[in-house]
Image (tube, rainbow, N blue to C red; front, top):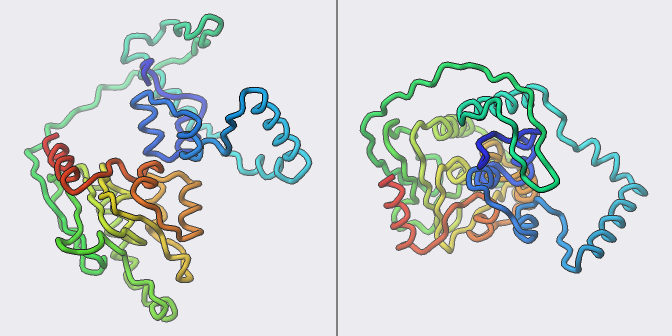
Length: 308
């Protein structure tokens, strides 16, 4: 993006699959780079070798031999993301439009290194009418206090307000979701709340204004819907996050769809299948949380976001 064009070669699909949408978007928009340790934390790298290039090459050869001798090669081939012709076409159109917009639609690509030049792309840009930018009305800030149990929450907030989601004042936790107790699981009554939970997901997902989510204490199960769909997610340093459903004989339902908006597929599988809770620092490394701090720091960050 710093060269004025969109990613090509399926990178707009494969990178989010590896590191999650939030981290991929950050890398795209800031031209950020990850060192080996950060790539490992983001699940982009499986191992980090610190013993030099030769040791890394030997390790790579050993891994290749292990793959060939076992059944891993076939499994890797089957797990590859299939090439999507429509997705590649969309990337190409976006690339061409970007080159047209920055005045370089038919210019040769610049040399990026002494011995390597990016081959020019033979693309015909689509001449589209410029988008109409509607003038938005005056907006306000609307605070929504999320109850510990989602049963009592009505998504009746205004459409023209910046939404700030907080836990109820004095509550120990932000939100623990529904009640997948053993009795509710055995009777099936926990399914009664799924329609309203689905409507809540749609209301959050489609809200036209930004959503700021401030988490403290525990955020679990259905309560994870808010950080997963938040525009900016702030967490107190004592906050923890998790999907404990598997430990109660169930799997995350509707919230599992929202989780993929911020978490990579690898992180989702880990959290869904183990029920492990993660602290605020780990949530930030995984892309679920954007800012971690004390109450004073959180209030200051909310005020800054409200001004924007």
